[in-house]
Amino acid sequence: MDLPALPPPPPLADFGDGTPPALFLDFDGTLIEIAAGPEDIAVPRDLADRLKRLDEVLEGRLALVSGRGLDNIEAHIGPLAIARAGSHGAEPVDAAGQALGTAPQPLSDETLGSLREISAQYGALMERKRHGAALHYRSCPQHGPAIIGAAQSIADEAGLAAKSGKCVIELVRPGADKGAAVRLFMQTPAFAGSMPIFIGDDVTDEDGFIAARDAGGCGIAVGDRLSDNAKYRLQNVKDVHQWLNL
Figure 1 (cartoon, helix red, strand yellow):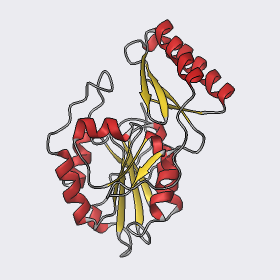
Figure 2: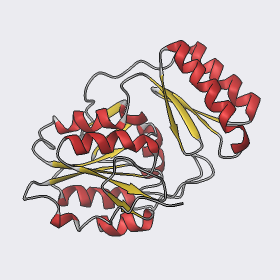
Figure 3: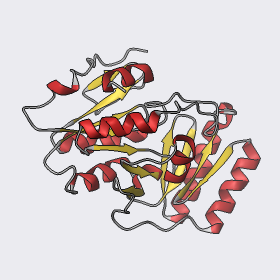
Figure 4: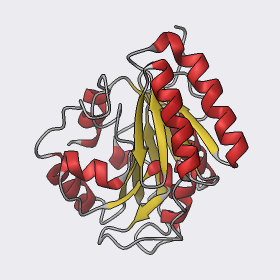
């Protein structure tokens, strides 16, 4: 694949013109390796502690922004003491765990039932979240187009947004995206006046790249995916950890 010639990012200390940087980090494919299924991931035991140390270096300007629900993230990583947003930005909380903004409503039973039918028909794994639901088809990629089409139809009928990623499609309430999470965090005292840098590997991270760029920062793409909005690229999870000094 011929990728745009995005350079590696400069050291974090060299970013900007004296404006303090803020980091927004995706989870799967950025901080941890992609696995066969959402529950098959391997997470370093001390990752939560490492992130807290990074947050202290940044004086509280660190946020985890993931497609996973916050309860699922903490089930894998343990309690977190940094700002974070789960479900593609639908669950934003500050470092103390206080909810920010207005929480969206969960999906209806009818919508969940329709997604279960698709899951059963094609052999996809359905992951239910507090404010959405996802269909993972990594184990049956040949059915990807059919699963995406069926899920999109359900989203259109229910007035929902469909978020596509690497072998996954997720239904969420409109406005639940990673860019909205960045904009919300940037309005809080901890992040106000900083330069946002969003790091992510998937198409859903493009919203975060755009929001960071619009606020005077930039996006860093991870891996071999084409990106229209990132300014820099890191090759893999290992490079991300090295760049962050995790």
